[in-house]
Image (cartoon, rainbow, N blue to C red; front, side, top):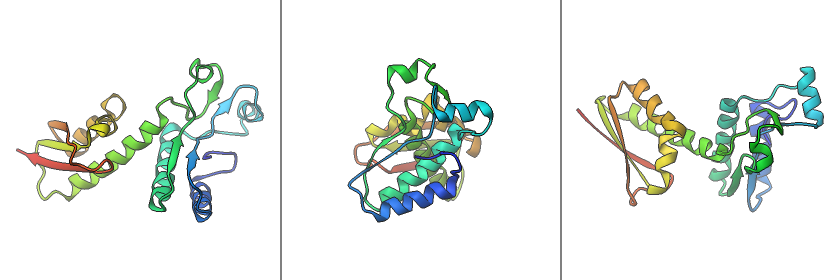
Length: 179
């Protein structure tokens, strides 16, 4: 669980390393959210606890996911299970809750891969085609096309085409550019 009181990125990653050293069969990674009626809610209202931002939480969980993946430890959930009580907006007072939290983590990983691949290209072009496994089209695009917008801005691109390709491995992408 990331973002507990007194926790920071370093302690979260150290905990992840300690957990991976135990060689569990699988792990779940949850961000800490403030639930109404809890002790954490009391601390939050008193200003004694500040939850992680969504952006910071996604970043830390991404690093933990990659740590566990490197150790061949399956991550079977990232983020809280979306349930009616949480989605109503009355139970979660603060913190990084989103029904598509895991998707946001995967989207950030695909954004990182695309940035790295585009930086490695010898000459920058106006149009880029990114091929991903069909199961990863939405992960590459990001929620509300966030990754597409960020890549266009970062690399001054006019157009980004995201194409499904079953040949591309599920955790990879392939980029080509044209004038």
